[in-house]
Amino acid sequence: MHNIQLKNGQLQHLLCIEGLSRRIIEDIFARADSFLDLENNNVKKTDLLSGKTICNLFFENSTRTRTTFEIAAKKLSADVINLNVSTSSQSKGESILDTINNLIAMHADMFVIRHNQSGAAHFIAKHINKNIKVVNAGDGYHSHPTQGLLDAFTIRHYKKDFKKLKIAIVGDIKHSRVARSEINALSILGVPEIRVIAPQTLMPYGVKDLGVIPFDNLDHGVKDVDVIMMLRLQKERMDSALIPSQEEYFKTYGLTSKRVELANPDCIIMHPGPMNRGVEIESSVADSNKAVILPQVSFGIAIRMAVMSLLMEKK
Image (cartoon, rainbow, N blue to C red; front, side, top):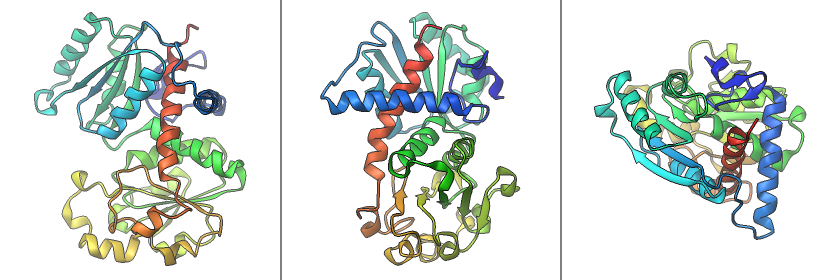
């Protein structure tokens, strides 16, 4: 599935983390660093993508992700088209292509695609002109590559060396495309110990095949870790029978100040957002000085600028 995104070792599309080399990820990080440097020097825009048109094509709502892609594109001086397409009218693959073909006729250079079906971005990338680039902004349970990259980039900012880290990912692993992308990115970057913590009902089948250590006890799972990554409960993607109640979930798997004390003293706390306070995470923890949740958002813009500029660069 990932072969389409690479050609002669060069990135053609960003569809998933699987198959990316460490070199490509580090190249994206280096670009993101340079965009952060510009921002720190009060340079708000660069003209790298001036004259290019980027279309945010969202078949599934996500204001936060769409907004960060839009800001990133505008900081690169691209023209941006935002389209929220109802999935009810997109029940067949052909109708997705009808939408895409109409946009190609409007001379879009890149599609940023969010869809509730796994593989949608790959499907579109296979059926469009090779000069048009595709970025997957989240597809079903499968992948959310820019989120995985921005989270790894955030960890690198605070922890520097991936090879010494213990990282815990906590929550709805089963329904989380973010968890899959993070696990793949962190594995490629050489993190020696990745733990996943969830009730059995929210743990995917064969999770050990991902090279992670599963825990069903949060207290045991966060002991001595350097990073705690909380996931949002994917209520829209799960059967209510998978957890007894939100209150019960928080009691067993919610991140509280007391539980944070079990981790390393300089542990950082992350969350891809939006947070369900009092369900996944206690407000006092989310607002503490260990939380790097707002910096994740800023780093996300830099990472998305890096991905877009890399893909649109003339090879």
